[in-house]
Length: 390
Image (cartoon, rainbow, N blue to C red; front, side, top):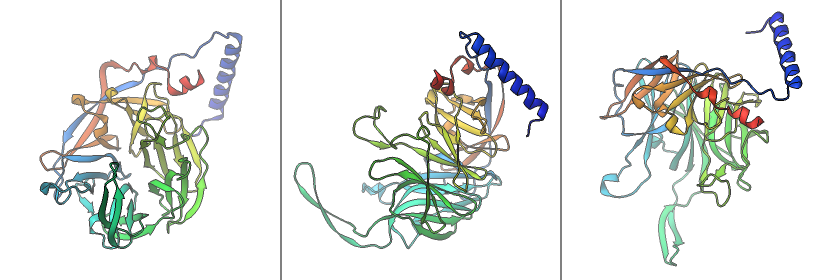
């Protein structure tokens, strides 16, 4: 909504007045932010999703599209598990529409890729894409290796070259095509715009610096995008103690989330801001105004504002943020001590979650109401933006 000329004049007058007061009184300090309204979410159970057998393990985070369709990535026991033979867990993605209609997306049924391992997926309004590493042929052979005690071993594996691919399905779970990516940098996450162009996030294989790129529909590089020096870590790699020193032991988690015509990039558990990218490759920085001691664990997909699950998890809260300036609008606590990680998405003001016990996938619909006689204490803590200015 555009402000009127009068509103703008009043705002400008107020800003000048405050600036004058600050110069007159060097001891002036920022006023404490108003209390964040606290809401509690209560859930009602729906009917179990027909035709879908749920596993005991579900991979987080969920994804949702603007029509309220939720995507649940279940982790299944691999073939041969009962016999004691090890093989990687099998992931199976299921979409559930608000009507209860469900579809499966079966990577294990592809016949043109081998040794396929899923690295992530992204759901858009028209299709679902998977980022995988795989080989285009099955070329079995012996490979020798030596263990730390000097013993020589041999293993039989597929010796064909492995590449990153984007595998594309329609929203009904039918396979459409695959796209081989260039080996220019290590892609960790991929998203797709309504036009069909891809956004890829990864790191340089030499110095581990973050890389953000626009890819054409055929997977070839269109251009690299410039990330501001203060808007991304120097390296995507971290250490076990979080110090940033010593050998890297893990890749810092990154989440790509659809939000209207944009894609949001979340650098989990850091103080780096959110990055909003449009189809032209323009980047807008959003700085969440959370209390200084909190970090975004993950974003909860939503058709309206931004909803962030925070870390440390003991907080147990979800924060609603204004997507324009990152200010906190509301804080939500889930009933019965539930964790915010169980919320799949927010659609039409409702919080969707799932119960996946007893072999069934049961949707839970959450309603938020103001907490009686409960005010958030967040205003007593400096926000991350205030801490950066101190």
